[in-house]
Amino acid sequence: MKPTSRFSTNFASGGNLAFLIVVVASYVSAATALIYSQRPLPAWEVVVLVGAGGAYLLVGTYGFDICRRAGTRRAACGRIFSIKL
Image (cartoon, rainbow, N blue to C red; front, side):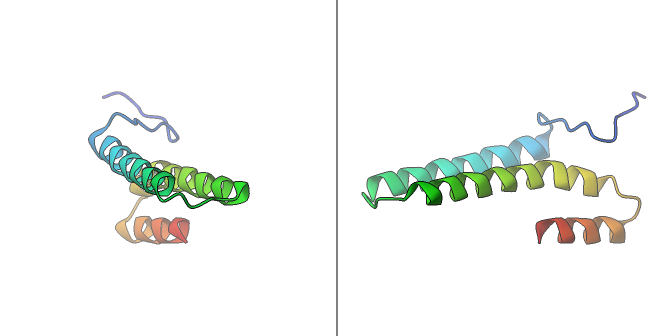
């Protein structure tokens, strides 16, 4: 059995890939809706939205992977809850 690093995450695994596809598709949908609504967005709102989206992707992939590797189910649930906050 191949040893795995504590911080290596395989983005091509089924769960991570499905998460990334769904989230990126929703981001594209939201961006398209904003573009076609003709509502002007200030630059700071765009920066905040892109930053929040990137943070959500990072927490969703790395955070879940780290919590999944926790020793017990209770520890995993506690970690994922605290990360999501």
